[in-house]
Image 1 (cartoon, helix red, strand yellow):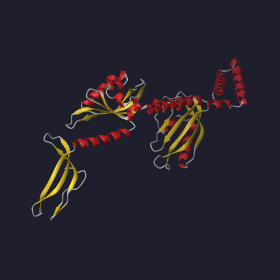
Image 2 (cartoon, one colour):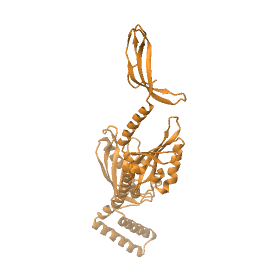
Image 3 (spheres, helix red, strand yellow):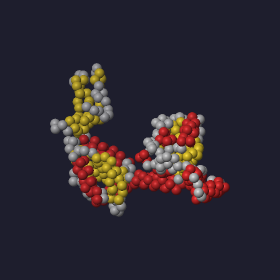
Length: 376
């Protein structure tokens, strides 16, 4: 027996104390529990000796239920989410202030309406299936659906539906908690738009982002950095070795040493170096990165986080005009030699000089084209 307040009757020698206002839950003949209030006093014989106790038992089930309803009503008033209940026919029976704010119906307007009237018509079948599932005794949680307000506006909500049970344990209705998801949807849309704008900005500026995690050895590239390297994202292994494989052979070790020195010191990493696309094309990359700290202690160096920018055109623009003029003169001379009578060996040399000068004119900073990269 559970007691809510008061004390039990205590018998000690000839002294006793009266106990009143005790509460306890008792099972009836059919097993249904109900609450009673007890008033207990000592029973004495003619000589004043305590021979037992007298108890008055009063059924306070209705009072306890009323008290419980009061507490529940206070809780529902304080909740910001919409809370309402449906009976076995799917008709609205209770309605809290949160539901008024979300759906726009006052309590007296909502009670008696079919629950499906709160759902977009296109989702009636889904809502009906969820209600049937709950009436079968199974709760349905985080059920996302478009709610229909009184003014007809559709609002994204997440529903939690729970079975309401009678004293005998039978399902007598459905309790619904509706959470307005509008802000979350707007935040998600804003984030998606920001990602799109970032990708567009990266593409316009030929700038991509990259991250090196020292603990795992993983390297992550942004979409634009994959494009700069001429590599499909599916073809990048995502490791430091794969990252360095696409660096020009002459620059590879200096880049590796500079990255390792940056995390060892620690200090920012900044460098211009050449990369070789899988088709053999050589491009120039400006890379800059800051030291990334571990989230656990904000002290331990976790790796590098930075950007990479394709500066090939800038390099090409910096080639001095006199060098360009000199290369053009070499091409002209070689072409004249090829048209003059030459021995086969001399003609081959003239052809080689002409082709080399043309390539130098086409590639930035005496650019070159290396054999295609077999793998990354």
